[in-house]
Amino acid sequence: MIAIIWLSDFNKVYESIKSVDMIIIIQGCLLQIITIVLVNIQWYTIGLQIGEKVSFKDMFHINMAGTFTESVTPSVKAGGELTKIIMLKSIANISGSKATAIVGVQKVLSIFPFLALNIVALLLFIIKNPNLNSNITNVIIIAFIALTTLSLFMVLLMIYPAKIKCITKFMKKESKFKEKIENGIDNFNKSFKQMIKNKKMLVFQTILSIIIWQFFGLKSYLIAKGLHMNIDLIQITVITYLTYMVAMIPLLPGGAGSFEGTMVLLLKAIGIASYTGMAFSIAVRFVTFWFVFIISAIYLLIYQVIRFLNKKKAVSF
Image 1: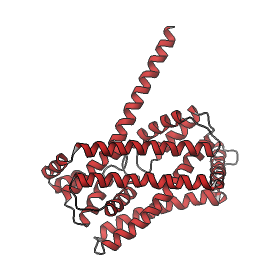
Image 2 (image 1 turned 180 degrees about the vertical axis):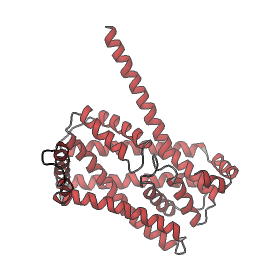
Image 3 (image 1 turned 45 degrees about the vertical axis):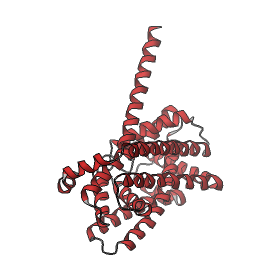
Image 4 (image 1 turned 90 degrees about the horizontal axis):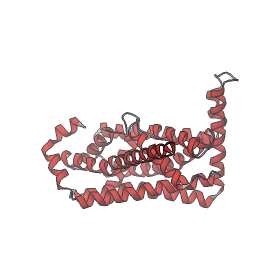
């Protein structure tokens, strides 16, 4: 990020950021709040579908804690997902294997539409820009392969759980860890099969995931217009998806740096100046990452303060 800002001319980046209308940023933040609500609806309905009724309030709290954690841990949201599993166990009183199943099913329902959208985005970007720098193409393809590999692993979990169980054959038979892994795989498989039995719910969840991902393209387009960038909705949506795909590679907390760098390089490939691209990526990241991080941090702080005061009040009585 520092290198790109330096090469892009910091003054021009700063002037571009200043030129963004605050109304546009506020509108982007409002769209982000809608996205948060939609994600919580997805989590809540998945829990219901696999037979675990977790209140919307508790699910919102779990997601806020997960969002905060994944913002300060490497990407692919591993830290956030682990937090959600632990909190589903402690708050909703769900078994570890069942909590893992809920998190796993949501991840599958989110990542497969995203992968499909990225296949389309990758083809469109390469077709429209046949003279792409080979380094840019390599980064995109490597990220795509990494995401596809993760998706194939999930497919094995869904269809051939016995194949995944082979990873435990080197563990001792009496090992509790081995038993937990095998139970987790079985519960994930069972929960997903339970989910796909209800075709209407499966279609609903798939459409909901696509809508959630489409909101990211819409927010980017809104900010691009605020920066007076000469780019259409399809172009900016394609670049946004490809950028998120690269940022999912677990390098830095929240994909910091890899997101901004990829965004600037892809925008530069279609003729957008580096300083404009950097200003755009910073604005997008504020709306989709820092704004959410701040909300989750404030929420958790208030929650802990209220909890502390309630405990103090109870002790005084």
